[in-house]
Amino acid sequence: MEWRKKAGDHDGRLDAVEQRGSRVVVAFSWSDRSDNRHDWAQVLELKDGKIVAMQDYATPSRAALATRLRAALSF
Image (tube, rainbow, N blue to C red):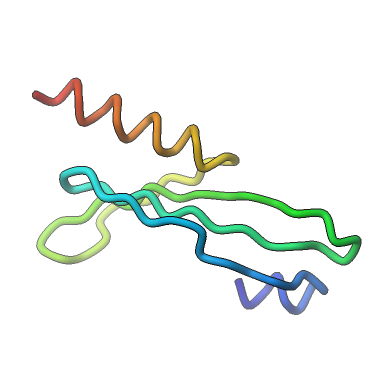
């Protein structure tokens, strides 16, 4: 988020953290110079308390859906 501040973006927020098994969805947002709000999310895969993989998603809802589907299919 630091590079966003340098670009003039502001009001960065951590909006949600949701864990399902070894995957964590982290949703965040920020406002650009024109005060347009932007959302983003990452799915982090954890192993032994460390991040071993990361996938970006343009919307938090898609990240959460992908994580829920993957959890449901792994049973």
